[in-house]
Length: 461
Image (tube, rainbow, N blue to C red; front, side):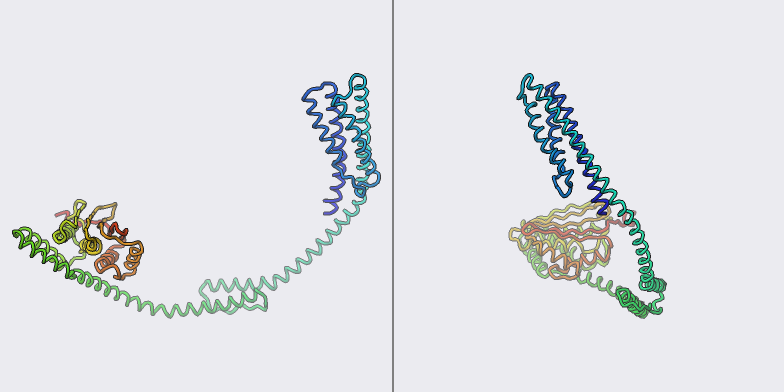
């Protein structure tokens, strides 16, 4: 690499620098003649460009005695000294310091200097080429020796690699082949095969020992799984029985919810009915009693898991009528319901607990009362039941806590009514949602989303 990339390159660079010096001067001579014949701006600009290029090439080669040698050092120094004299004479002619015969005389003097410089540069180029050829002849035998050395080294390298390959085959490939064979047996569920043997004490040996341990541990694990499978089969039957028991418990929870009548609600309602009976004729009292009776009848006598939407709507209206009679103008109620409510099915006892939750936890603590808005609508194949109140609302941390308790199946901070609705819709329908949104001081929104379906028998009737 030194011979080819340094020495040969230096020879070529010296030749190139010498040649470029002559070429640059020849271009300057031609441009100077054009300028002498016709002094135009274009010729002047071209001449200045050629002058700069010639100067760059003259000083491109370092004036280094050790690198150039005595002969070329003297020639290059003479070239530069002559070039300095030439540049002063040339610049005087270009700048118009002479007139008439003196200008002609000085012009031809510059021509002579240019010829002299060209001859001197040509001798410098010849000397450079001659010394390069001598150096090349000196290097050529060494190049031949490099080829021989490269062949010898290649043979040694090939022999060394062959020996290394044999060693690797014995120390690495044989254990790997054994590992592959054992892995295939394990893939065929044959875990209790003979251990892979190796006398390696390196990382590969550790790998083989770890493989043997893993094979043994996996076999024992599979064996334990087989033993546990029979136990799991027996547990599966027990789980089926537990599911039946859980279903019965859900039915019992629904019955408990139906029979749960808030004592303060019943007491306050009866007080209002007694007061109204004393203040007016029996019309309002009768209406309140009928609403309360209808509510009790629905709570205590409805056995079905699903009822028609219009039944739930009627219970909701009766309940809110009683609450409005209790709270007066403090509570306002609006209802927006879709059509065909008499044919749409939904879970029993779903809407009234939502309204009760809005009254007790939303508007009850608020002295000035508020409004409750209930919407029942269909969106694509889902039935949406939304109850919004303008009550005291909740913080985001309280909402997050309630959502977590609902998901975990606990009643803490939720109430049995809401948690029961959440549990029932998730047990009855695979596709459903239960949303709670609230903002402190602005109110709460609870939305139940269940699959929309109608009772075909009722529609035919």
